Length: 214
Ligand SMILES: [Fe+2]
Ligand SMILES: [Fe+2]
View (cartoon, helix red, strand yellow):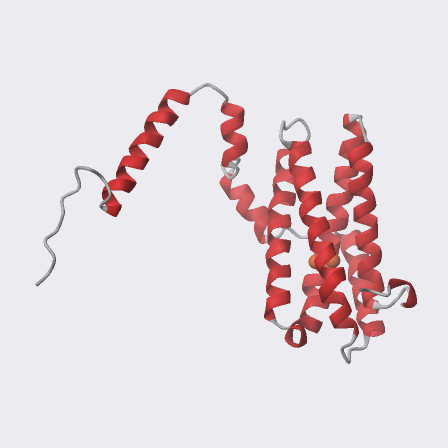
């Protein structure tokens, strides 16, 4: 487990852990918040913090520890960042008033809590033992944070992907929004897809049996 209190504030790992505490606090506050405007303020703050945190990890911290920590730990962290980035991009795109907004943010919070648990439980304790100048790394991370806050955060690939889908990239939410407008068509389509799958696998009752090759 991470001995977080023993690290100086400018140590790279201490900077990451402090960021984690800040976003976890925002997630806790979101759960207790009742007003729409209060929730919106928290979402805005959390998304900015998460984007900046992900940037300093992906640009500076992860590359510094990747080779020594190995791809199992690091690739899983990459994929967790990717999933979070998709949800963040959708929250940015849909804006206030979307009926799935609270649920989407809650799922983002759950996913980030899980990611933090893995970083603090496995990645960071292992990284702490490496021969790395964590003070110098920390300085780089703080400088990059300052730059991102001053100049803005550039759009990532997930924002471009979500923008290109133009609202068609979230099929469960879109289906729920359509409600009962087209159930008969959906049911027919489902039956035809099932029949087609049966034919392809040769499992249908009318499927022709091939004579085994001699
Ligand atoms: Fe992190
Ligand atoms: Fe991370």
